[in-house]
Image 1 (cartoon, rainbow, N blue to C red):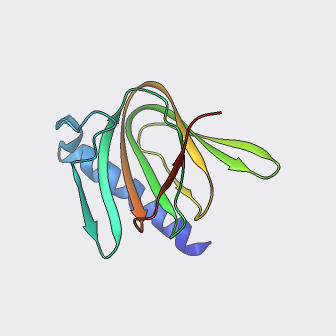
Image 2: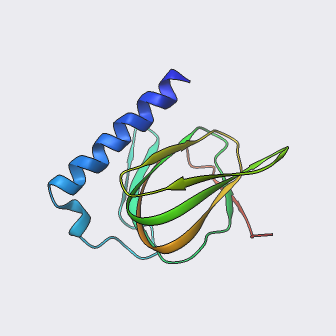
Length: 127
């Protein structure tokens, strides 16, 4: 739990730094393009411009950290006792736990940074 909190704080700090140095004004690929990413020690790191809701995905190898640079997105987590929603506003981050199905509801054009561990991501269509 402490690691997740530290990761979320670090990502939030990176978001603030990115805005300060003007990264937010650089165009990121429109979804579903993922060309702008790097793999660092098994972690996929990148960003994209979100225009529409996503289908469900799950990362079996590790947690995923998400940071919103601008816009408004809800991250929906599929839990055994029902879905939970994490609203993201600019500069906010969340950690999606390993093995949890999730998707994003995009309320307006948004830019999202992601850090995803492993390359075994699974996808399924929206309900």
